[in-house]
Length: 183
Ligand code: AMP
Image (cartoon, rainbow, N blue to C red; front, top):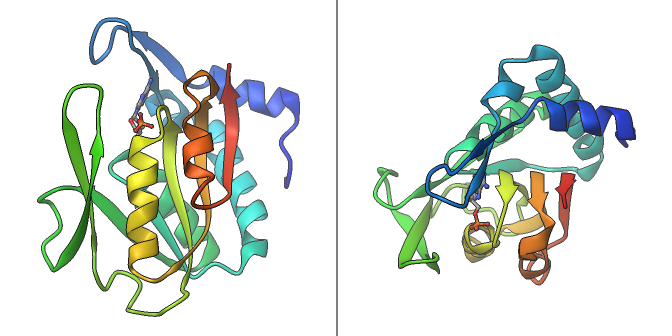
């Protein structure tokens, strides 16, 4: 299942629920809980990612807080490699490096354990999240992986909100793959 058919893509899209005006007015929130509780959809997605990424000779999957943990950890066990969480500031207990990024109003920060990839220079890492919107979160998380001196092989999203052009920002750092392009 290297490439998903249009029908399979539509099936995955249909398994994701749109919640208008969450968390605030004007945002259409893409709710993946309805994909996760549909074992056929969840398995289709994970089988696709496993087939694609088993060819990449990866050593770690890094997942972005918090929905990136779900897909990232599931993929890591399928590929037989380690999982690394990239968390919002103040959640990781050991020594971290931190990256600040701009939100619509204000700033946010993400962190990674400095030894997350066991200090291996060039460790082959795939970064994953559920969705890319403006790209701010993924750019910051990508910088963290690069700062550890690992190799960021690719950044993967279940969904890309194409009209916000976030993908282009991340592509300046590493190749990007999105399973579903939302137009
Ligand atoms: P951004 O930094 O703007 O690319 O936002 C990406 C992060 O915010 C990801 O971790 C997403 O899970 C979350 N996010 C942003 N917009 C949405 C949306 N419309 N639906 C669901 N999650 C979203």
